[in-house]
Image 1 (cartoon, rainbow, N blue to C red):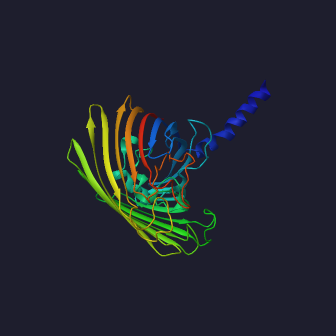
Image 2: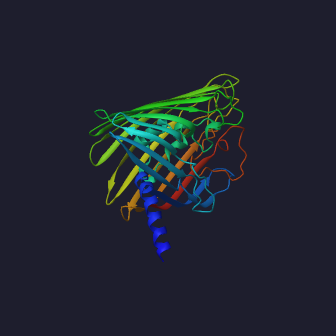
Image 3: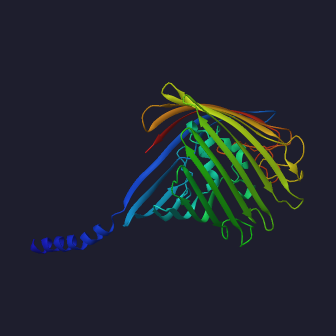
Length: 370
């Protein structure tokens, strides 16, 4: 009995300094976001009824005070959590280590770029910026294909990012991604530079963002995108707009596309509504190559109408429903960014989906945050 007491006492003494050293505040968090969807496609393309997990995730985040106002921070977030089926990717979403102080925040790892921060101004918040109603179907040319298909709204591996502190309503961020081992077939000196600035003061929000991709899709091909957006909150209703230009190198010359959009949201009863219209113009340049939804020439435009209502059941749980119409011109190939329509319909090389289809998507879902 005495030996056991001594052993317990020694173990307690050894554990004490370890417990004092491990003072980081660690939190388990996550989101379950599932919806039932029906997509009606034009022509002979089949209609689809499905259950989709919309960017569900879970992760660990922590902070440790280092003294003098300096904190160490970390996050490990599981991506593509298969709440509707199976699967997942440990550290597949924003995962990093970094430092935070009065001067701002530095992070190292794999995470979304400053270009994505614009989505927080004009994106469909009641749909949690994801799913069929997401504006990324056109904006950023994000049809679910990733950097290899030319999107500008994606997670960037091997990244270093700096974000400023809030200075009289202004925040800014700059990120460099060293693409050395992230893209099949891309050059070993490939890189991505993304930067953004946001100003929030009273009822106004505005943002600018720029992203440049060097040799990411293939050696010798450089792409860039620029977005400007803003909104004004009138109280019962917030309204705003956005404009974007994307510019791609191709072996047959440049390919450029402009898009614009308007949006509004507000409170209705206990919930929140959001409506948006966005239009991608005919692209200019190379008409023999598809990059995501884009190819050059006439009849290559697209428009999207999206509407959502979110009804909270508690601080953590809500239900929502929405509608999204994505209407491609005859030679355009835009697709939903989360829950893309595939269904085995033939698509050109490099395209996000079939050419010339119109989709009418309906969704009813539930979300729980923990």
